[in-house]
Amino acid sequence: MTRKPSAAAVRDQRRRNYQDLAATLNILANPHRLAILHYLNARPEPASTIGDLIVGLTLDGMALTSSSVSQHVTRLASVGLVAKTAVAHPGGRHVEILPVPAALSAVAEALAKLAP
Image 1 (cartoon, rainbow, N blue to C red):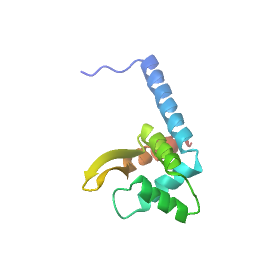
Image 2 (image 1 turned 60 degrees about the horizontal axis):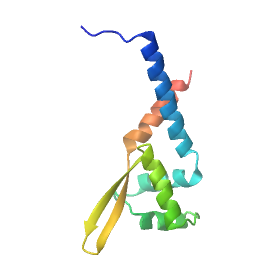
Image 3 (image 1 turned 90 degrees about the horizontal axis):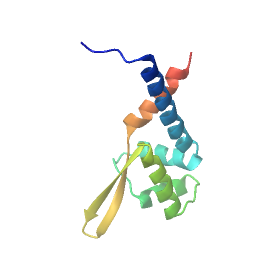
Image 4 (image 1 turned 45 degrees about the vertical axis):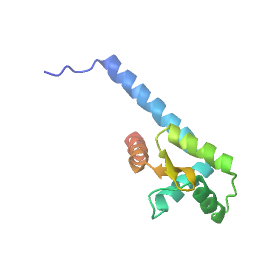
């Protein structure tokens, strides 16, 4: 038989959920990060590199440096919205950046639950 969580445990979990959502929304509250997410999700190929992102963002009118794009990607990865994977190839090594659609869907669902 499964035991029902206490009211305090439910409140604590709800508070943690709100804190996690607020942290994610804080990361999303940046036009460059939103543009990066849009670019990653709109690409027909499953992965991008920092160089791909710089080209895509430049075409959208957002000229960002490599270090700036890298910092934005790191912030998005810190809340699970993108995944970074190091890949070796004959010319060296690069980092592929993949969107995590389930994480973005979870944010949308959490926001929807706040509506009456």
